[in-house]
Length: 391
Image (tube, rainbow, N blue to C red; front, side, top):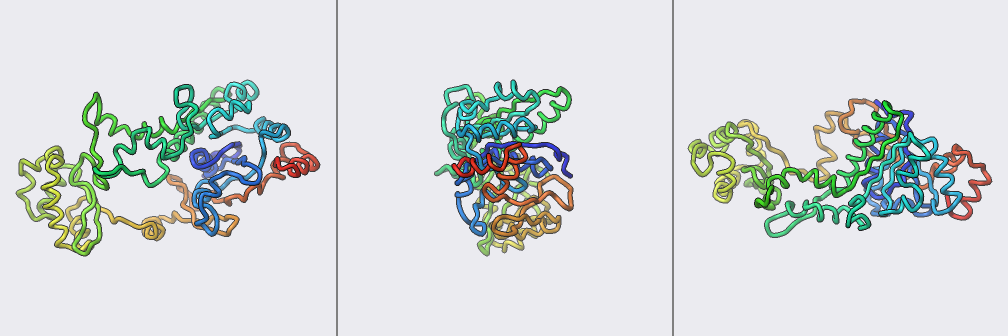
């Protein structure tokens, strides 16, 4: 299923947020022309070399794209970019704050020149405002948004282990562009999509924000356990393996007490009747539950939890995720080519497609000559741009 076939996206993108958004569009069939710096390209190409010499970040978010190297500070390079935008449906950028406007690529100017063009700006904090010109990387925004205040243990905050703010912004950009394409189909007018990492992350903090509404105490940092629901988190079995489990309601709690703890009287104990009471007495209750887990191996505990039944899970390593039986059973792993050879890649979530689009991760500037020729540049003009390092 590639409903965006025929849609062309030109993206001045780097790092994660914008490339993640445009990869989602590419997965749906859009043609994505990734504009990179000549010589070095998207700086995420150099984050690491863990995938056969390629960056783990880069191969994750850049399949299904074409790489065009172009110096937009060069007059001829900017002219080439403008030619591409004249035929594009969507323009995406996540340059440094204010850089797009200074280059003449702001919404107002582009809309005047190309009324049907959808323009998506992705930034750290958005403009205007006192943070408009601040540099924003994922950890900075996790900090400013309050995410770090609710993540970690009571003793120490912790960064989320993935680029949560980048991903949040990328997904809102992606969904915003899809909505803009629908709107343009009705009005024939381009739409301005303006996504900030801060706003995307704060939206995801809805539960902690409202839990602390009107000056109330915020939820405590609880490590791998849930901050306000109990029992909900990790417990160590007698063989040293960790099992994650969760009780969500009173019916499950009663069954858990009877079938797992073998202490049915605890279901109606005043200290544990209702989640608020269990949460208030989590230290004492945790000791009771931990003692029962210590009597069992992880496999035995999982078997009993399944029989209750309550939700439970293994705490998988990343190596185990690559071999996860559920992903294998659903045929979610496919092959994608890279400059270093084929690698495994996860099919786009949600799409029911036996053959999802899995075009290669591009080498730096791999498509430059073909794209510039398509935009109307002659061989001599392309040679000239290349010779002076502008393409």
